[in-house]
Amino acid sequence: MEWLIWTGTLVSLIGLTSLFWSIIKVAQAKRAQLDDAALREAIRRAMPFNMGGLALSVLGLMAVMVGISLG
Image (cartoon, rainbow, N blue to C red; front, side, top):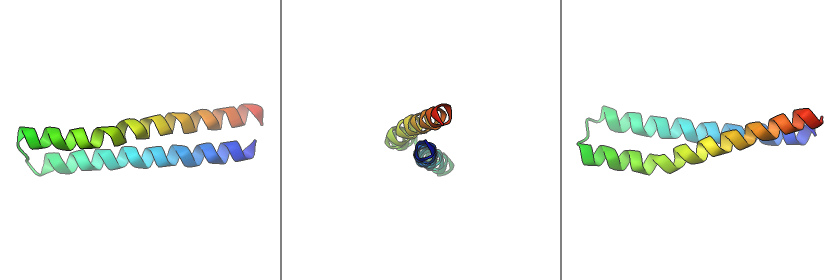
């Protein structure tokens, strides 16, 4: 089950990368001193990456735990 551990690790790292990307994009928008509507739009565009990254991280960690349990 070693392949499940490494696959889960890869999926989790992809999710974390997506999370960090969304955090950076929102921080850049806040630092740019945008008006309220533009800031909301930037957050709205980053939200799917945030939620998708969270989901991938959770699924990857679950795969790692299953691989450890079965291995």
